[in-house]
Length: 309
Image 1 (cartoon, rainbow, N blue to C red):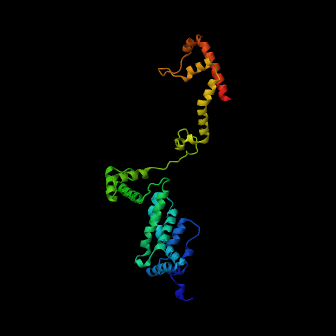
Image 2: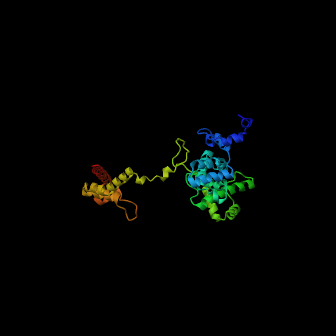
Image 3: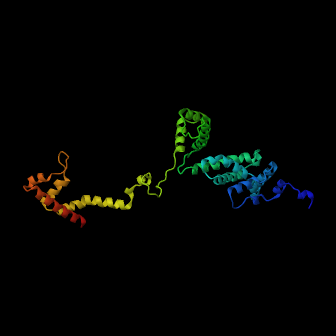
């Protein structure tokens, strides 16, 4: 072996190594980032050659070379979105999807480098992932709302730094007007998006604990018990007892007992004060109030037996 070969620089040795072998199959995220940062960059001529091989011949290996040489770009862009509380590994994964889409659509004859073209696709995939996963309920569903979401978050951070108050959350009216002018949107759109961003997710069911002061979970008041099968059957049974069942029970009574029950419980006086009193019925039938009470008690017992049958 010649002296020149034995003293080859690390960069030269890296250039001739298979770049795919540098990416660990398993390991820590830091190991992955360290590996992709060691991957060799392609020159403009190499990039154009691989891109034409992919475009003209569908060369998968050429596509792999283009992707591998730009993985560090995805890592760099992913760092810009760490403030959303999502794992960087997931952000990198989504960014890699965007990079592969860019490589598939890249045209070397347009006169631009892949790095400039791929940035749009990488950011688009990361944006979509953040919007879908930042909250259980989407804060932005249209293209205009997504644009406002990311720009508003960035501007709010800048305003907090200018005001030297990193803990302040709400925007003042002047700041809302400033943001609206800057982003060319209506102030009410800024207010609506800020409310969506400020609102947190609420668990449908309460945590599994027995604290007396625990807040009531939404499941307690959102559930519609009226549609639950057992509740429907119970309500139907009550309706039946209140109509057909009650009529059958009354028919089981003699005429005097039926009159007393109806006058006491099923009729309303002119002053809407309820049924007749024992003394009023005693005067009507010419007996004592105690006797009316006894007849009523016996009639109610007979009606319960008829309803249970």
